[in-house]
Each structure stands twice: as C-alpha cells, then as structure tokens.
Amino acid sequence: MMNTSNGTISGPSSSSSPAANPQAPGIKTYFKTPEGKYKLHYEKTHSSGLLHYAHGKTVTQVTLAQLKERAAPSTPTGTSSGYSASSGFRSATARLLTGNGNRALSFVGGNGGGKNVSASSRISGSFAAASNSSTSMMTNTNFDGKGTYLVFNVGDAVFICDLNSQEKDPVKSIHFSNSNPMCHAFDPDAKDGHDLLIGLNSGDVYTVSLRQQLQDVSKKLVGALHYNKDGSVNNRQDRCTSIAWVPGGDGAFVVAHADGNLYVYEKASSDFRKLFLTFCFNLPDRNKDGATDSTFPAIRDPTQFTVDKAKYSKSNPVARWHICQGSINSIAFSNDGSHLATVGRDGYLRVFDFSTQKLVCGGKSYYGALLCCSWSMDGKYILTGGEDDLVQVWSMEDRKVVAWGEGHNSWVSGVAFDSYWSSPNTDGSGEHVMYRFGSVGQDTQLLLWDLEMDEIVVPLRRPPGGSPTYSTGSQSAHWDNAIPMGTLQPAPCKRDVPKLSPVIAHRVHTEPLSGLMFTQESVVTACREGHIKIWTRPSASESQSNSSEANPAIALLSSSFPKDNKGSLSSKIGGSSLKQ
Image (cartoon, one colour):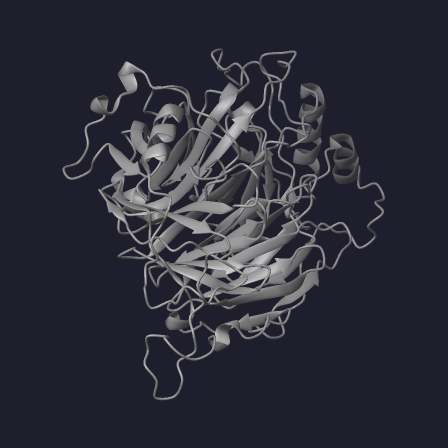
C-alpha cells in the first residue's frame, strides 16, 4: 500500500539512467502502453547495512510527502512544529515532573530517548517535546526546507529519500528500538507542522514534523507526540495496520488495528503551558473525571459494527469503531473526507459515512481476505484487491461491484487510480470519461487497467436449462435493484459481473510487490523488501504520436456479452493485454 500527496520528479540524468542500476535477468527497464513507453528512471532502497532478517517482520509501505516552501526557522535548531516551547520552559517542566512523578509524560528529544515518569494516571496521547539545546541536536545544513520525499519502512526503521535526487540511499533514517513501524501517512496541509503519522507494531502512534526530522541528522525521532503508549488505549498491544489523516479534519486522524478496531484521534492540544500547569501543579481542569484515560466500554457483539465514545470528554482517542472480527488490513478516505473505506481479514469491503458514523455499503471478496483499497478522485468508484487474485471495481452510486479484473497470478497487494492520466482519445468535453488504474501483486507484476464509462456490458441471467452464453434471457439478478443503504452483500457470481482485461502486465521487481502510487510524471512501485522503482511517463510528443496511430476501438474481452445490452454503469473491457 502507498500513500500519496501530489509530487513531481525531475528529468532523467546520465548518472541515474537505468544502466546505472543493474537489473535482474528477465526484468526489462521499460514497458509499453498504448500512450507510449514508461522507462525506469532510478531506484531507491534502504541502507545496505540493514540486517536481512529484519525484513520479514514488516511489509514495506511507501508514502509520498511534498514539503511546501515556507520561511526558514529563526534558529537552526528551532522546531517547525506548533507543539514546541522555549527550551527553558521545557527544562523546568522536566525537572518538576521528575520530582513529582504523578503523571505519565514522555519527552522525545533530539537524542530520541524517552524520559518516562511513573504514572498513576495513564495518558494515551502523551506529550513529547524536543530538547532544543545546542548540545543535543545536530542540524542538517544542506536541507532547504522544501522538496518531495518518499517515506518507507523496512524492519525497525523508517527511511526518507529525496524523490528528485539521483542518490539511491536514503537521506534520513529513523530507528525504533522496541518495535517496528508498520504504516505511515503524510498531510501536506498540516497547520502546526506535525504532518507525518507513524504507526508501530506495538500499537503505538507518533506524529512528527517531517521538516524537523530532515533538519536533524540523528537516527531518532525529534519533537514527536506519542499516542497509545504501550497499548494504553485498550490494554493490549495490537499492531497498527493502517493509518490516515482525516481530510479537512484539522489534525484529526484514524488508526486501524489488527484486533478489528479503528480509533479516531483529535489533534492534541498545542498549549504546552496549560499542560505544564495541569500536570505539574495539579490545577483544576474542566474534566473533573480526570482523565486522560481513554478506556471504552466492552464490545458487546464482536460480529457487529459499533461505535463507542471514550468515557471522558477530554480523552484521546475520542471514539472507537469496532469494524470486524480479525484484522483491518487497509483504510482509505474519499478525497473530500466524507466516506471511509475499510477492508479486512474477513474479506469484506465496508464503506462508512464518516460524519454520521453509519455503514453505507459493502460486500465480500470471492475468496479470502481483502488487502488493499483505493478511491477514485471523484469518489465514484472504489478499488479492492486481495487473496482471490482479483481487482474489484465498486460503484458508490449502485453500491455494488460493477467490474472485476483478472490478470494477477497471486494476491493483489496494492491498487491505485492514476488521477494524472487522461485518455488519448478524449475530446476534452468531459462527457467521455475514462479511468486508468493500476494494481500490483505478490506475483511481482504491475498491471494497468482502463475503465471507461457508458460501455459496460451487463451479463444476462441464464434461463433454466439455457445456454451459458448469455445469448438469451433477462439481465442478471445482480443488476435487478439498487442495494439498500447499510447492506453488506455476499460475493456475486463471477458470471454476473463484467470482466476487465489489463492494458499492460509487466514484471517490475524480483520480490513480491507491496505498493503502487502515481505522481504527475511517474509511476512508483515498491516491493516488500524495501526496494522502490520510479518509472517515468511517456513524453507528451510520444503520447501524441501513439495516439494518432492507435486504433480508437477497444475490443471487448468476451464476445459472450451482447453489445445491445448496456447498463447504466460502464467500463470499456480491454480485449488485449500487452505482456512485457
């Protein structure tokens, strides 16, 4: 799985050409599509000294992070986060807490060490402040405060690479001593500087400033806020499986766990002085119950979706959503933040209205768990992939599967829409809508697909004793009626759903793939071992040339779907697949 925030990549240079990166036998450094040739620009990977046995503990996920240009801090060591305070004030607070010791307050400083005081009251979103003394933080004088970066996890570390750099090795690594990072997310519009979320195998969650991490040359977190410390929320260390900022949520975020629960967090208070007074002097707080304790009532029926609020008004997290039995494998917000999609070990896609906290629709895979999901930019379609080796296309309008793609030879581990791609045959009127999306799997292949509106061919219901060629009969029952709100559907019969064929299938890595994302000028693929490849798109001139030569007609995959029986939702079914 990959998380993206719009970014671009610089033009190729001689030192970063594919020739500089030797490829494994049988893997080409390019692949062809109808619009032109995608070429391997360069690769990114983790430090060569990383022990190989650590790879098996985690699966690499990649996040694209674009730092916007902004004024440089007044001092070289100053934090860019709104959670910072003066060095003297922090030092005084630390001394008082050491003497008092009646609250849990963790300081993560420039050396990355956590100073934990014994606590009688648990705080799930503990404050972590940077130690800004000139002796404890070393700054990176080469960092200019802007750029586009790839953030990815391998073993017990998070690595940060400059997307536009020719260097293969990361510019920064952050190591965790007691747990492994599992997932992360970036918010390009964060107002307080804390723009990067990191979820760990232990269930702990950190928010940090990416800019501040790049300014510091150490290998530890700097100026981090620490949530769910040691599993304090539910007294269990259930690993984080997926994490996401709430679009337009003013710093709110959600964290999915392996126990089937999803927690909603509000942005922690940036008023350090208020925290200082409350914790050090035990001054009265408007929360008379005390508490920072974010306990929740017991789950009454593990098989049912439930939403519970925290017992105390100032707790963080503020709510628990019990989604399913078993792990939640991936979550994704629609672009406007109105809906949240989840997929899990039980094989179900679930779509929720985030504001009302109600189930909108969902359904089951053909077989096994679902591993990944992704929204189209307009919020009309959702992609899912999983252990049935298929890519399913869900329609929010019809609340059902409207197409499925067959082409992978193993589990589908990553799906994404390409919001930067436009059809070579589009007339610019907006009436002819075609979607391009991609998928990657454990078969090491990247598949690209085209989904076109107004061309889907709805299969017919086979009459009793009739031929399975769909030559006679009425439409399949799958298309009879709109699905009621809040309904989880069983998997439809494959013969009732139109089948897509990939436009391209290309083996891009030697190891199973774990993530895919699209930028304005490239396609980024990642394998579970932590190796990343950046493929540049065809040039504009090449795309125009191929468009003029291409046959605009795309054949249907199956002649068994009659052309005179079209439904309201559509997809152009690719009749050919380019194998590289």
